[in-house]
Length: 95
Image (cartoon, rainbow, N blue to C red; front, side, top):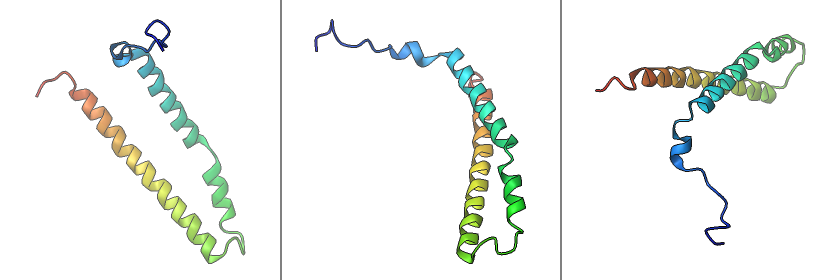
């Protein structure tokens, strides 16, 4: 492919400080988290768990482990969100 027919790639500086895109991405993340929090999936699960014969010991362990993993992911998101905010607040302050 010659230089005249090569697809045009954006220059790194064109996307380096695309504040509008970053703003849209942050808003989309916020919306996704709101939708996740508003979901009734866990409420529905809480209604299923007490049913007699709901699960075998193996299935119980699978669900318990899945819930523990989901909680660990939420904890990690909380930590990472605080880190991003703290780092962003420090930007431009110098050392």
